[in-house]
Length: 269
Image (cartoon, rainbow, N blue to C red; front, top):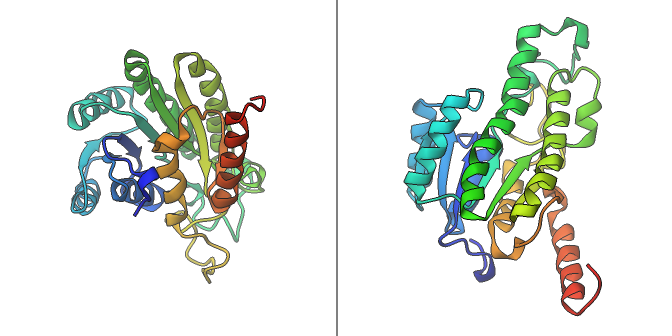
């Protein structure tokens, strides 16, 4: 449960890819903090089940969407605005990993020239074009209301350049570049864009089964909850262009608070 200064009562947040893994963990934390949450994912039993489970402890709306399809995204934005009464923050999280291209990518890396072009296109369409379509569509709503926040989920720098990680690495490198440019483009309008990444491999369904999970190498998906709640809270007002590593969030937050306190006492921004 969030502390009083991190309560999100009245906040309306949409999380894409919210039926499992990182998305579900963030949606869970946001609901627990009091936010109304739009659980956005491809239509089907998993979306219904996730919305029912999360809705048992808070205000949740199921939003069917295929982030690769612009018409589907446009419709999802409308459903989110109607279902939640407006949207204050969007978490761009929907994505697919290397497992869809090479099920044994950790132990048997596949060189880029052996990657099926159709598989390459599918990952880029979801992880990069999907972020663009969702951000573009919600931006019009944020511009109209004069405020809004995006949180784009990213990965470690090493993942973007690791052997055998085409097309996942390039898709995440592209989405991070998109996020930086989004921040610059939207800052004049009072719309925030921040990056959030786990800080290591996580229990999200994207890791091959043969990789050992002893609790040290693989992070729990719940590591994303506290920073997601912070980014939706009033404490994050005015924050944009940040790149937050969830595993290091406590240290980052302490530094952020100290720096903000110094600015409040008249130190230069």
